[in-house]
Length: 220
Image 1: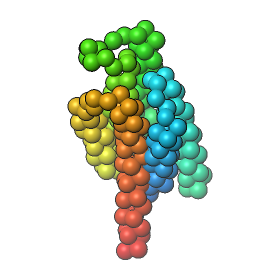
Image 2: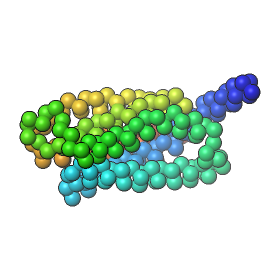
Image 3: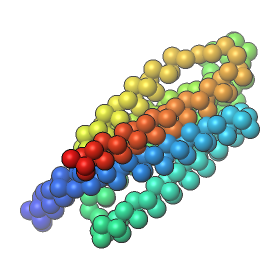
Image 4: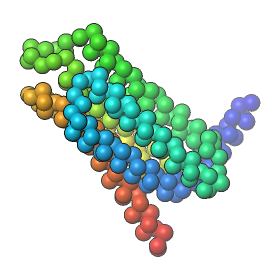
């Protein structure tokens, strides 16, 4: 039984290494799509002034559903084009590696809603700000860090650029924790701005980079 599992693990690793270039090519449209969705959602959220913690979390959860659904369709289409199974052993390995961090990211948003419902005052409540507004900055930072951890874990099975991209999100999210604007209105706009930067601009930039570098490789 153990020898069978070891052989299966080796086969999965060998398959992932052989398909590294394919996965790198497939990442470009996925990242570009996710970046466009994230950036567009950030602009819409700011324009229509989605400002309360509850509406902020609900809105970005809905955006995440749209983004994930589109990504799954793109991946399914690419798998069909390559005549490969969608839920292959390598895909399961990547999903298992990213699942803990992604689950934690989902629960962080729920935690903010629970704290808001209980009207838990943060340590800086003496400033007179409304409970939960600070979470509009902390939540995007937490999501960026946890999502970066998920990408870093997936990077062990995919091109190494994914691990670097994960580190950028982790360090960016941790750095933005230090931001503490004085005006509540600034807090509201900054929450959507951080989401647009992390899940819009960075994804779009990485996708464009992958697209053009892969195009140069194909030409050469």
